[in-house]
Image 1 (cartoon, protein in one colour):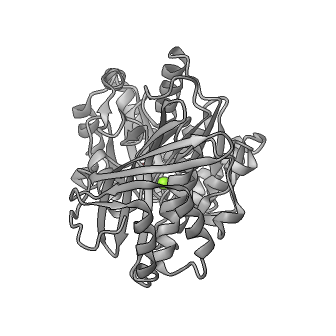
Image 2 (cartoon, helix red, strand yellow):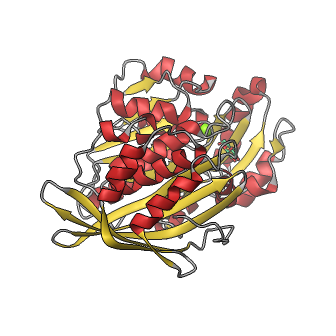
Image 3 (cartoon, rainbow, N blue to C red):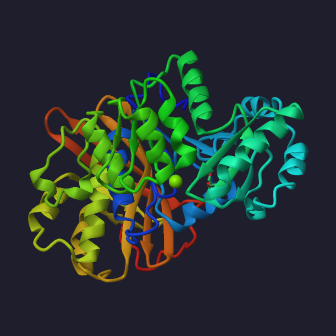
Length: 423
Ligand code: GLC
Ligand code: MG
């Protein structure tokens, strides 16, 4: 969060499973990739992305390997009982202290074991401040009431959350996704960085609390679960800051950005002709996101006649500009674009995707920009990632000129093979 020097324009706080990430209808990750392009191009530089998930860190890392998830600024894991910052996920120790208040894991374990209705979830889901079970829906009310009483008698203050029609979590009372968000907002406020707008996004029971935090907009994605919709019918219906989207998962998040007028809502992935859609050109990150999207479409063979586009691209490259591959090999930028011709459609039907993450631009001297990003390429199940640095210069009203591109392997890359490297 340190990278921002002023209040973020927008903070998105989103659940992952069945909200940011589609598990049923969208094997191609279409709506997630649409969100990614929009975020990186229009929001990354001045906004905050927070993921708030029921998953523990290990299971979150697993999901990151399976899906094209962006790197959030803050990650809240294990149903709001852990808060970590940045790419290296530095835990918030202060939050751990808060979670220890009136909590004793051993006692919770002991008391819950007396309920035959509760079946422990896998070991990977059991965390220092979260015990998770499966329970039959018809038993939830009874078990919850009884468990609250027993644990209160033993001096604990806990919270029980029912989600997805089957999962029951026991947490410290001060935990949960809502409390974690309230804590973050307070922290940002003391730093003078309270977001101008906050949008919370969710689909199930453990997301309910997010919608109760004052002054936030909220979207329940169209595929939201019964327990969240029931809460909304009873408590949220009169709140015009909450919508039930008509689109599923990340599509619903984009829909909410538009509905509440929180900023740009058109993902570059929804633009078929980039020449028809020139941006205001204030952020060179836009040029990079657009280029790699073009590159994906080109190799997927989805762009028919794009001579005009490659021509304009070439014109925006400095004639002496070079690209340095991870191997150290160097090529002219303009030659590289010519060379692209050979690769039109070579990845057709190969489940080829390219996405950019953490696109951040800095103006180093007047008119000179450095854009840093991670560029991912996936073919089938094989992924590679390069840390990419692009230098641009800009002249008044003339847009950005690509000066050079430098790429090195990211430590996150699973494959480090640069044979057939193009860009
Ligand atoms: C996630 C967690 C699980 C929890 C559920 C509901 O699926 O992995 O342990 O019970 O969210 O909060
Ligand atoms: Mg969910």
